[in-house]
Image (cartoon, rainbow, N blue to C red; front, side):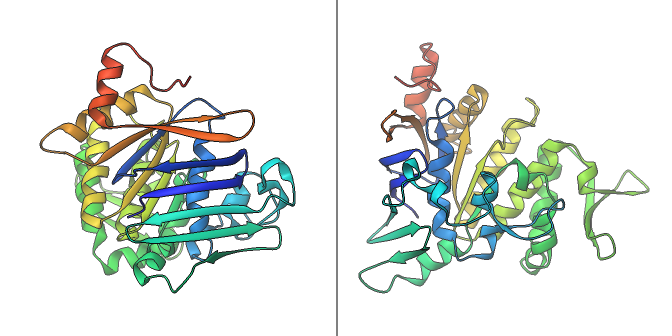
Length: 316
C-alpha cells in the first residue's frame, strides 16, 4: 500500500507532500488546488503499464492518458514541468512500507531511480494501476481490452451482484459481442439485450469502476468526476460497493471530489460498523508560488467539522 508521495516540479506544483494514505483516500479542495495534479503524479508510476495508454472509440490511435488529459501531443513534455522550465526536472517519491522509490521525468525521458532492486509487489502495484476520468469512464475501451481477463477470475459474477444491488436491476448475465465489440446486459424481465452504453451514465461509470477495481488486485484505482452522475438514492449503495470490492481486491482508492454529499456519504459509511473503512480525507491547497499543502482528516473529524457548519471543500 502506498503510504506517502512527494511531488516536485509537476504541473503547477513546485513542491509538496501527502502523507498518511489510507485504504480509501478522498482529495477535496477548490478548482486549481492541485487535486488532479496529485492524482496524475501518483499515476506517473504506472508509465510502463498498458493502462497508461488510452484509445477511446473516438480516437484513431493510442495516446498517453496524462498527455491526452491536457491536449498534449508528446509525453513526457516541457508542458508537464513546473513553469514549463526545462531545468525543472520532475521528481516523484513514492513511500511504501519499508521501501522508497523515486521517479524522475523530463522531456528527454521518464524512469525510476532506486538504490537497489525494488520488490515485485511494488512493480505489480504500478503495473495494474488505473486512472479513471469521465473520458475513460464513459468509453467502452476498458471492457474491450479486459473482458476476457475479468472472465478468467469470474469477476462477471461480482459485477452482476453489485449492479443488481446498487441499482435494483434484474440483470441475468453479460455477453460480449465479437461483431460489434460491445458488452451487452441481459435482463430476466426483458426479451432483448441492451448495450452497456445504452444504460444511464451513472450505471456505466459504476460498472467500469467496479471492473477496474476487480482487475487491480492489490494495486490502486484513481478517479475523478466519478460521482457526478449518481442518483441520491443509489449513491450510498454505490459507495458501499466501492468499499466492499476494494477491500476484497486489496485495492487502494484515490478519488477527487467537489461534492459535500460525497464527503458526507463516504464519512458516514466509513465509520458505520457494517461498512467500516480506513478512509482519509485530504484538503488540498496550492499557493501562487507552487507549494502544495494538504490537511488530513479522519472521517469523524470531517463529520464534526461539517456538523459545525464548516465547509471542508474550502481551504484557507
